[in-house]
Length: 201
Image (tube, rainbow, N blue to C red; front, side):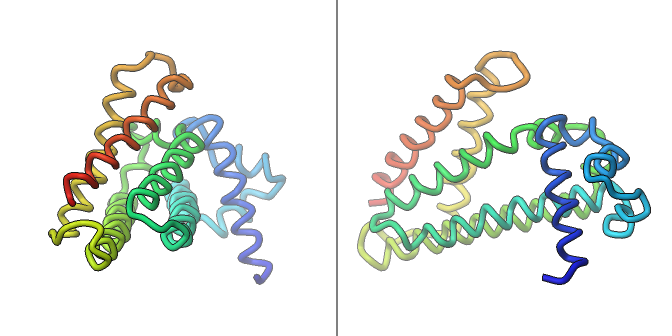
């Protein structure tokens, strides 16, 4: 990796640490520069504004997420095992980057750009396509009956997201979900996966 790429990655890692701790909206470019002991001109050379830095952070997180999913999809034998592994990976990322999730509903300009929304939609589509591929492999191996894998993948992932939203809505009212809330989310999502697979057989 060339020096420029290393510096860019260091900035992204520093931003992730601060975003996780304080949230995106409460973090300034100056604070990130101070954390990393880099000059402001150097920071702005790699990321001209906060929005571009947020984009870099989101891209890095999703890259790590999909790298694990793409690796793990071949590590399990059955559809139930694969989906359970995927749910657990998603849950780990949700816990780790929860402060970024909290920032999602804010009016911060760095979070409301069309480019950022487009990026999230691309990641959503990629996730659906990956799950559709898993479902198609299960059809090919006679684990489940033939179905529209794209629609089923979208329905499945939307259902998982719905569980997360409802558990947070009805859980404690603190800034962070309790361990009990997080455990409930994971258990319900794993149960949903089992029910979903049974319905496809």
